[in-house]
Image 1 (cartoon, rainbow, N blue to C red):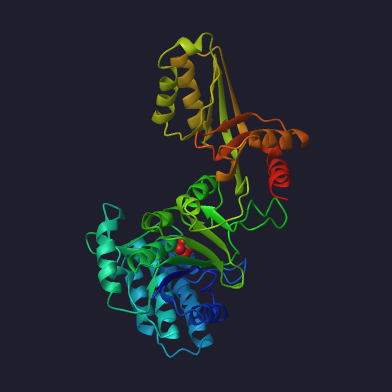
Image 2 (cartoon, rainbow, N blue to C red):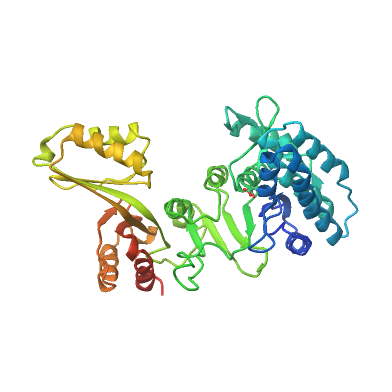
Length: 439
Ligand code: ASP
């Protein structure tokens, strides 16, 4: 029988009402057999996520821990009574509190939100509870995919319906180890792969990925289908609905991800698929030139000029060495005959000053200018490859909006064009590109 893995995020698990909606989604779907959950998130914009409360519990002095633990306990007891569930968490709470008082690790404490969340959803759905400690292993600080896959595969073979807490597993010493924030998405992907799901549904509180930032463009369209590669290009520039590491376990297994909205289950959401599967006709989408537009501000441009630069062997290497020594990440490096531009991630002033001084000393440029206010915008889509005129349209849209392009870069994959504009032009640039390609 076809099987789905579903992951519900923090807002879906935030209170009794939203958890009842989670149940509606699961019950309505016979294929929805393996469920991963986050800890309860914010009930409204001024609320605090349980994971953040747990971090405060860990960080607080001993004398303050009781007060914070009470708030955490109330979050869960409100949910339990709201769902009229017959479960008693007093011994779970006592254990967490006494462990917190006796110096339990950060990873153990932060993982308890997901643990209790799953302990609620499992009986509420009538599903088995499988602890993440049974299936997820870390080695040397990172996920041990092979061992995890083996354990998870064997464990799920014994159960038809289960709820698993997201976000953590065990390290080689048998201690709890958590993923980075948002890591329940990774657990969901691991479970999807282990149960051979044909789809990994990631249920959140938005209808899917937007074509661009809704804080800039009013009501942008939802992307119906995006490829893993396009998503990489888009997420790298700041669109964050899904943990980037969640892509790997399902991508290798060829399982598509479907981003869905618990509070608007009628919406189809965004499908994330392999490009090859579109080419092979397994998935169909309306072929737009552009799939999405994403960007971010405050990059730094270091513009260098030196006579006869193109004859100098090793000049770029010397520049990159300086970045490497100062732990600075390079985004782009367009070059001219006698010029090089380094576009780097935002860095502290002191680090930038040190790097610039070393470049002047070692590389001896005729001119060197630094601009700390660059915005990078990626216009992304497989639809543009092997097609003429996309760069023209990007430039025309920006020029008509009276925006100067400081840099332009197109990778050889031809699936993205990256432009740099002044920070002040960023929002206007996104809007004009949206109008040109999507509206
Ligand atoms: N609860 C964790 C966080 O807030 C993990 C997750 O929800 O994915 O980051």
